[in-house]
Image (cartoon, rainbow, N blue to C red; front, side):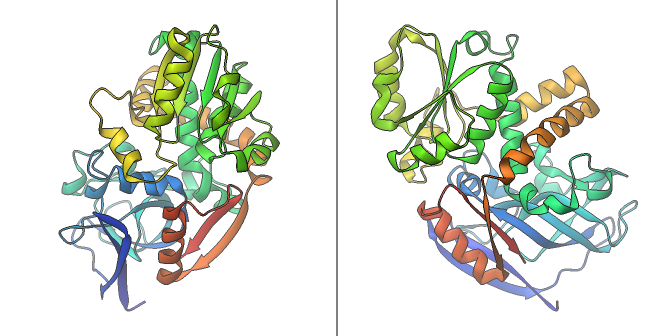
Length: 360
């Protein structure tokens, strides 16, 4: 490829996009060039854009003033390297731009991968700066790359969220709740969390749109599934923890009014209902936003990094066969397809079973 490209979005109007082309960058001393190969696009990526300013997601991949590059998860190839310990030909999984290439400054390179120590990423959450070599990754399976780009980042959130909800040291109220309720229950993050909570013996109720009730029941991850109009089906006498995956302040208010003192814990996780109201809900002072890297750092201290990785790999191996039966992979190729899928997912038109995977 003799030219590079980047898909930029207007940060004030996310449905306005531009493809910016240029020369393929050359790595400097201590740098490596990644060619972005295979990525997934889900509502999670829309959440990154909605929270781009509040959570600094726009800073990972700088763009022109007023524009942003949406972060994606997926695989890339090392196509040029002037960094010690990072040979050409390595395949890595990590946080990637909606673009053809990425220049990184590898640090702490070892057989498992490296961290990007680029100056503009130095004070950003370290979770997003890690690039894992497929040859040193306990989760990697060549035949499940599509599943990994679609589910791995979401399931990692599910993994640490389910752990947090059961961590009496970190959140005794949530750990003591007899029922956990998740909104946007048809979303991948929600039902990954429900899967793990059910494994741990927790009672889990899913809230979803009327149109998605049948699909969500068919997942087999919930004890009960209710439409958003059916909040009366929740018992205020039962201590309940609520996990807002929808990012819907109006729904949270209705739930608080119905459950009263029965609502013992509450957390906001995502913005599956992609709109400006959802974005605002995340930045309301005092909102109990769950930030996965916080719990990940706690468990890295508790279990060690190898212990955390091993537990996640074990959970993934249990969940992957379930996820495979619940997703229809839709393949796309190139920047125009990426733009089309971005607009589709942004609009909320993507069916729950659909998983968009793009080769770039």
